[in-house]
Every structure is written in C-alpha cells, then in structure tokens.
Length: 346
Length: 262
Image (cartoon, rainbow over all chains, first blue to last red; front, top):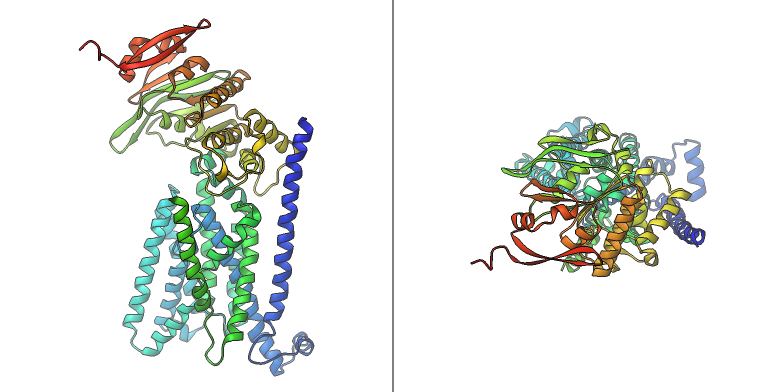
C-alpha cells in the first residue's frame, strides 16, 4: 500500500512535468519561427536566401544593411524586452501575491521613463545617443534604491505597493512637468512619442547596452522559484520554511529594475505584457508561481515579437506605436481582471 | 535532547505591551496547549517562538543558542509553524501544498527527491487528506484546508511544531482526530505547542497547559493543576462546572463569574 501510494504521487508529478516540458517546447518553437518571420516583415521585402547570404558575407548591399542594421536589432530587442516584461510581471505577481501586479506597479517603468525623459529634456540625448539608455537605467536604479530604503528592511508587501504608487506618481508628475516646461514644441513631441513605446529604428548600439542588463535581470528572477512557491502560503509561513524574504524581495527588485530599466530605456513604455502573459499561462503550470517564471519569459517574448510584427503589417505611412497597441489590448484586459478579482473577493 | 526556550520575552505594539516578561521552556515529547482569553498574546508568543516576531526584550533559544544564530533554512527543518487561518494565494493542488513543506530540504530550484515524495505521502495519510490529491485548494472546505496545511507542516519533519489554532474551523470529529494526531507527534518524540480556545480539548489531550493573561503567564502546569475554578475565574472571568467520565475530568464553562452571588 505504502509503495503504491508513493508511486502514484511521483507518477502524477512526472506527468505534469511532461506537460510543462511540452509547453516549453511549444513556446520555444513558436518563438523561433516568429523571430525569423520578424526579420522578413517590413516596407522592403527581403528574399530569405539572398539576404542571409549577404548578411553572412558582410556585404554592404541595401538589403544586407536593412537586415543587419534595422530588422535584426529590432527582432533581438523584441525578444529580450518581451521576455523581460513577461518574467518581471510573473515575479512581481508572485511576490505581491496579486494577479494585477506589473513592472509599472512598483514604479520602475515610470522612473525609467523619467530618466529617459530627462536625457531628452537636458539635450544630452541630442549630443550623444547613449545618454538615453543611461538615463533610463539610472531612473530605474534610483527607484530601486528608494524602494529598498523604504520597504526593503521590513519587507512588508503592502509597504512595497504603496512605495511603488508613490514612485509612479512622482515620476509621472515630473515627466508631465518636463513636457509642460519644454521650451520648444519639438522636444515635447519627441518626449511624447518616446513615452508611447516602440521598437522602430533601434540599432545594435541599443542591443549591446540593453541586452546584457536584461539577461542579468532575467537570470536573477528565474532563480526565485522556490521562494515564490513558498510565499503563496503567506509571509510568515514562507519564512518558517526557511525562505529569507529580505533576500527574495531584494533579488526580485534588482532583477526587475535592471531588466525593465534597460528595456524601457531602449523602447519606451510598453505596458501590460507583464500582466497578460502570466495570466494566460498560469493554468498551464498548475498556478505555481515558481514554474510560471520561465514560461512567462518565453510567452512575453512571443507576444512582443507578434505585436511588433502586427504593428508593421497594419501600419501604412505613420507606424502605429508598439506601446499603443499593447495598451489598447492590455487595458481592457486589465479591467476584465479587476472585475474578475473583485467578484472572487465578494 | 533539544529544547526550545523563551527567556523573558517582551513585545510591544506601539504603546501597548503584548507580551510582558514571558518565560517558557518547551522540552520534546510533550503536547503543550497555549490558552488564554482573546488578546492575551497567544499568537504573538507562538510567532516569537517560531522566530517570526521581533521582541523588545528577552530571547528565544534553541538548544541554548539564540534563534538568530541559526541558518534560516536549518531552522525551517527544525521548527515548523502553522499559521492561523490557512492562507493560499493561488489555487494550487493539494499535494503541491504539502510538498511545499519539503522546501527547507531543497536548495535553489532543486527538484524533489524520492524520499520527499514518500514523506509527503505519509503525512498526507496521517492528516487524513490522501483522498484530496488532485483537488485545488479553493475547492476544499475549511476543515479539509486546515488538515492540508497541517500535513504541510508535518512534511517538514520538524522537531518542534508550533500550531496557531489548528482546530478552530473543524467539526468535533476532526477536532478529536487532529488533537490525537498532534498528541501522537508529540509522544513520538516531537514537541508540539498548540494554541487552543477549547478548554476540554486542552484538558483531554495536552500534557501541559500554559495559560496566558494580558501578556503574562498566569499558570503553567498539567491541565489538572491549571484548570481550577479559581484560576479560570481569575483569567477568563467564568464559573466552570467540573465532571468526570471514564475516570477523566471534563469541564463546562457555565456562566460569567459571580453572576449568582449578586
């Protein structure tokens, strides 16, 4: 009896492991296909074989330049920014134990935007292009340090949420102030377009500066599995199970700040990916917050690559901003989640 | 023989003193009931024993060493804490929750081993939740959920089990079963501290009863010594009727103390 019962639990687990592995493979294959199709979508059509050949031989033909300088960095950024947003959303939802949490909630996106806006506003971005990403990452870093000083020590989740709201409001107000006081309308327009979020016209310079930071941040978040699973049972129980909540909180804050700060600094504000993706994938991993991390990274990358392809396909003339598209889809979804969560509470 | 000691614990929330110089020694092999009126500091004391509560004065020692000197994961293997009101943020499967009790034995993202599964199976049988495998927590009744959480605490195979009102939401049968299970755990060599409101369950199952009143230890001893008419009137302000069944005492809270004499 004992052995058979034991067998059953192991078998159940192996079964669900198999399902999760299938999901990972499915997501990876879809990601691979989308990544390559993303390279061939745009105003100039590129022939698959010739362009790849010219890319490899580092020719300077027009198609090779388009491929190398425009399409490839754009696809790479979509991949990593999507993964960043997906895994950050999943990690924050696990930490705050709230399906409505998002990188925006703890104020990292907002303050990263503010950092980038300051780079615009001061004119530094016009003088040297790297000022923009540096501004964004500094903004995110400041938010992290502020959050940690305010909420890190006692690691109460409510304090963290409230601190996040404060950071978001403050950076929003300062961004509005910059727009308000902008001496020339051109700068204001530039800021305005920046805030919408887009992947158009990004170069390998952006890839080099942002991707390593995003990789570091994503890796930090993926290591939080066990802690997030235990946290599902509450802060006290997680601590009694040997989880150091201060470390876990710090690790998630730093991971989110690094990856989201870098992402925002190269692409502006792209909202709701971190909300939609974990929500859709959660049932497939048995609602386990730890298992959700990796699949959300893949799912986020998938969604953003897809959205970026859609943006290019449906745009004629003025390209629709990626951030506008994700918000148009994400905001009603957010409302739906709010209504659903409220019904559960009642 | 390992032991858990509270030495002169004082805890303040703002200006009010929740625990006032509480000392307590918990040897292994005993089921200890922690009782007292609402607001007496039972939950605060049990959280302090689990190392979850900041204390202003005094300290909690495990084998003579301060809790803070221990590695947190090591502590997780030795002391299990069962929180009041089973909290679970996501609709996880029952067996998944019980397996979370094995967390202190795993490092980083390490997977469960064979013996983790066998321990999970065993404690699920002990807590009478084996038949709930595959169900998600949001479909369980209050009593089922409590027993699942108890199985989770047992899955850590702790030396000390600290349970905050584990029988509050259970029907009489499951109250008896859970108390019997806790007594078994204690008499099998573990130490169990259980916060209770039911004087009879404490009388019937506990080897020792600690009665808290306004943050102080009002009485500490065997149930027969602690549950006297005088002490219960002092601490709870009630008159109690006593009886005996199969040679064992029971008691019944009857009325507010001094009601008849007026």
